[in-house]
Image (cartoon, rainbow, N blue to C red):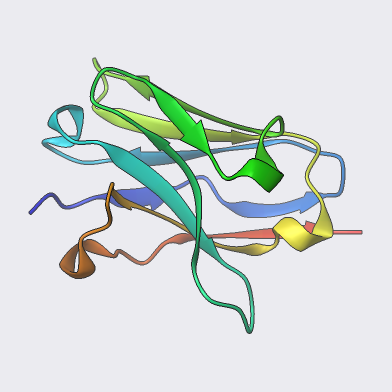
Length: 113
């Protein structure tokens, strides 16, 4: 199984932007997804990218979220623009479909109004 580490979260004002990173060996050979879990809610799918970079998004998030790959850096990014308070959550990366044993610590994103 691939071990992934998320980074890049923090506190940001509504309307701002943030770029999250997901790094790990073997990531270039996997379809990767970003997921998030807001307080009191179930974890949900955000976006995914295939090995070749074909992307897909949760319909309600399309337009503000962009998932990209950097094959040289073995990293998958999640760019979030026009952040809203409801985007506050712990953001995780995992394979797509997700591997139960590969959930990491995630990275906290907090959006203030």
